Image (cartoon, rainbow, N blue to C red; front, side):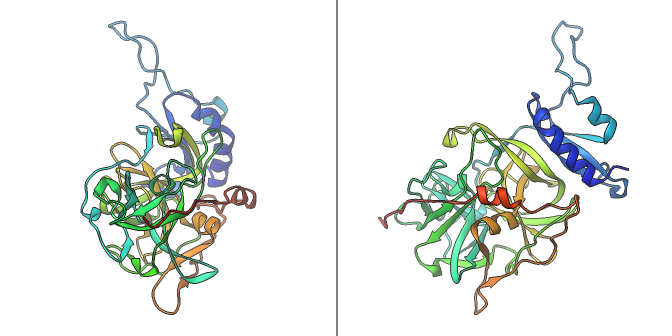
Length: 361
């Protein structure tokens, strides 16, 4: 039976080579058999429906190229192929959570004059417990992945939001996305014009008492997104290196993310406009992971641990009352079937960039 540590180390060794192969979109770590977790780990490969054999069919047309896996890899660990379309940042579709609401809770439409995504969480700066900010994605709140002024409006522009009527704030800081080196977070923090414009609550589920430091393969989550609404999902793989298509946003095209989580739903859980939504633990409502991409049909969500966002931005989950910030729940396990913290070197490299000021007009 293969260990999760061995699966993680082999993923680290082979993923870059495998992701260069046409038709492979992601390589991560998960269960060999999801219905039988005791059977141990496997390398999970997210790929197109690729033929087991290449060549020509009876009509003389070329068959799809066979999936080629390193021989040493197949000898060392089980490999589970998961059919998947390409992953892409979420775009837009209509939803009941796209309406204007004040004060603004997590789960509702937010964005710029051109884009709509989801308010992931309302958070506070650790050094300023009474502060409130919006946690969401770079591609939801930022002006083309740059530090140009970015007004935050609720609802987002695709849902009819306009400036100045619906402006609630401006992007304060964001993690820049890179075309030619690995990415870890699609993340941005927006500061409101006034503190009382934001409600430290979560649509449908209410109070979020904190966040977890870690979670494991097989964990059950729930979330509210601007498009799919209230949904549930299961962590299918972690430590997943994955390619995500950003199209013409910031002139990025398809870029690589390292050590992401893939969360599967029985119905769509990550469609256009759900970007920025935050997965909560099924029990306890603790924030767990930040959604930012998915497959075309929406059954797979690509997310990163919310603990990474909190570390990089120096934030905690906000709440009303005297106790303004809540510390994370325990769960910093170092087991390889659990998500791992960012290394100090990586965390330092992800230092957020400051956005330029947006005038009140």
